[in-house]
Length: 246
Image (cartoon, rainbow, N blue to C red; front, side, top):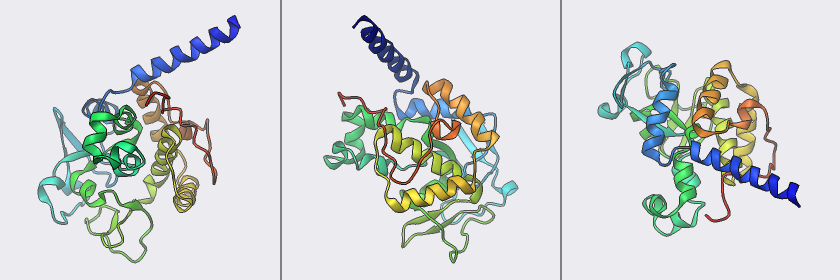
């Protein structure tokens, strides 16, 4: 009994350390994310250089061949993109059904943790962030590029966004992480797509470095990057980021 109590106490303490290490809200997460990505200041989808002045980031559009599609103001600023959109993880919470994102921010600790999870945040050109919206990821072989040399495609009617091959594996492992940690549903089609992307675009040294840097702030790594866990079709999420009192 004493041994069991000791183990339980140790696990609670360990969980508390992890929880305290994570950012408390989205605003704090954005500040921490800037520090994590400062060493390799590139926009996620378009690989454009970023220059920072305080909290404001500006992409070097000319150098990376980016062409503004529609929104010049957003194209010239960096925004923090939720790779798994807030709509995806939010609408699975009761708070979203009762008042959307604003209500979730006010009333749901788990939603705030998901919104502020550093593994799910990437610096993106604002216009691309806006064009991606909450569209699902997919492949669009017949859709032309709409942002110059930036290798993304958007089908606004079908609400599908195609990222470049070099970041597809990163996206897959972020989705696996978010689904596993917060007990979120991924459709069979999503799982199959992301499993394929995970194999086609394996973990890189850069991704491993970002994983280690992010772990210093979050208190734990992304196990699908470190290789501790492997997603398979029908994987049952552990939900280790959802506490019993949420």
